[in-house]
Image 1: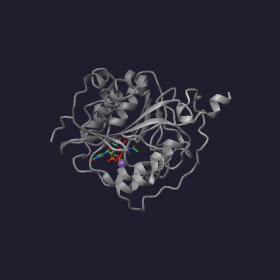
Image 2: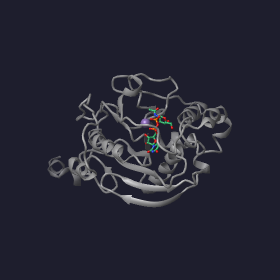
Image 3: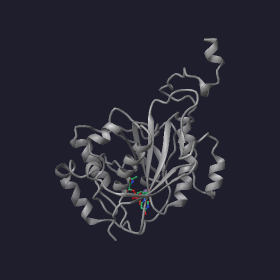
Image 4: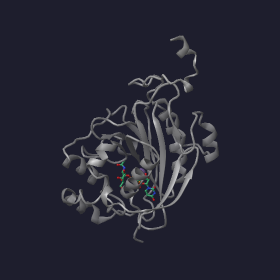
Amino acid sequence: LQEITRMPPSTSKFLGPCPDTPPGLKGPLNVDFDYKLTLDEVRKNISSPLKEGGRYKPLDCIAQQKVAIIIPFRNRHEHLKHWLYYLHPILERQQLDYGVYIINQDGEGVFNRAKLMNAGFVEALKEYDYDCFVFSDIDLVPMDDRNLYRCFQIPRHFSVAIDKFDFKLPSPANFGGVISLSKSQFSKINGFSNTFWGWGGEDDDLYLRVIFHGMSISRPDMVIGKYKMIKHVRDLHNEQNPVNADKVRHTKSTMNEDGINSLNYTVKEIVKDILYTWITVDIQAPL
Ligand code: UD2
Ligand code: MN
């Protein structure tokens, strides 16, 4: 025993698993977006020992899960800075073995959040044996670090109480914002649909995929599940698509042919920053 405890933690071959409840959590957090930092200042501000690509794992225990955080992105650089500034320290306190993947849609075509999520899932798995996937909007910051970014027995909806919606759940079927699915849960439902272009509907389609595969979703309570959404207007080339609302009537019949098994895209660029892995993808978006 003495031999083991004398070894520095990072080189010890005898690390135990991290505890179920991470010991360093703070609970409720102050979150505001009234500061301005450059990306370089964000890098300097973060004290956790990140590895190239926005990767981290606890030094003194073996993380319970390997979590890829997948963020759909285009032209939201201010939001990205806020997200990184707040989330890295939180994820470190949660003792996750994690990586941050910014999936950047190439070009000016119509945005497709769901297809970007699918591409992120596939790309992250090429790098590391992730067992859990957290899919997050860039503009949502949790107000309580007890909201653990990990996977559960069933798919999880994290962002249940957002300031924009008066800290209320908009509907019991709401599954947008921040969610997690294990690798096997996500594979079982064939991922997201690839065919929701523009704003709306893709989150409802994903919810139905979960339900139609005999699962349900879990949620934190309304205190732990509080979030702030960075204020924004609807982006260019992501107008609400009236077709999308109607599409969810056909989810049951299309879900097994439309998803991870029909995904195609090309990677244009991969950039490794200390804060994230940046993957620009061409998803053949219509103009
Ligand atoms: C809601 C949902 C969101 C999604 C969307 C409909 C919640 C809390 N959020 O968010 O999950 O279902 O409706 O598609 O229910 N993005 C870019 N650049 C763009 C456009 C979008 O980066 O030009 C990304 C970014 O990560 C953003 C996300 O896509 O946070 C969702 O887009 P939004 O923030 O405009 O949608 P919102 O807030 O209505
Ligand atoms: Mn938003």
